[in-house]
Length: 361
Image 1: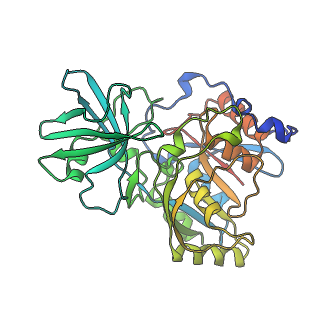
Image 2: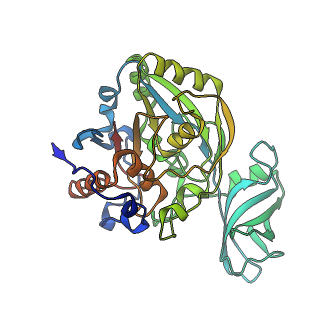
């Protein structure tokens, strides 16, 4: 068993974006998922001692105690990437982020989107995605995104489902395929709204969730639709200068009641993924109690931060200089996390969305 060193870095030092760098051999970036979801490896970190333990993800029920609660983000990824051509024949790409007015519309025609090439796709330009499916650039937004209008021979959602591509992250350097429609999605995904998977949940299978429930673990669901805020890199030199885009969430009453009962009975709350963590930290009060809420959150968690909503965190390995790595460092300590990442590199763990997992408790 390895031990990660205790953190000695000052608050000023951990506030520098450059403090969240690490070296990763490119061959450790997982480009495809394993044949079985729960066959992934699991690096366990003890927050108190820094001890590291190499486990299998299927061992998770041995780590979660009866009476604990496991909190899942059940947002569903939609095929948000549209590939097409400008009238000149040049290629263009449009990443749909969210409908103007939210995901409640049956036929959302206008969308906030990220477009490429950004300098060429000005208001008034049209991209032909397929025969009977065009996207018009309506206007530019201050943050660099565009408002676009979908038009075609079918309702907008039907066109997106038919012609859209799975929005795999750019470090997966291959086209999406039919298998990604299933595997870049949790087995419990329900409401549509994410442009990136809540990847910590990709390791779960229905039988594994049943094992946890049979052990007496409360399985609780919330929803956070993953948008550009989650995966955009931190470009500011100082961490505190970075701002996250707002992401829409729903935390229902049954979830609040279940977690309050968990706390009252002495159980621990396990956040599955940084997205679940951010919702829980958004809706918890100063005394550790939860209230049902729905809205949007811009909460950016980074050192130093005092957690009130979670006791353990299950997460994948994250990119250098990312807000996700900063969140994990806030929970376990920056030096401990980077030591754990060095250990994972040495042990040839698989990194990022389709990679292995880490649990901090």
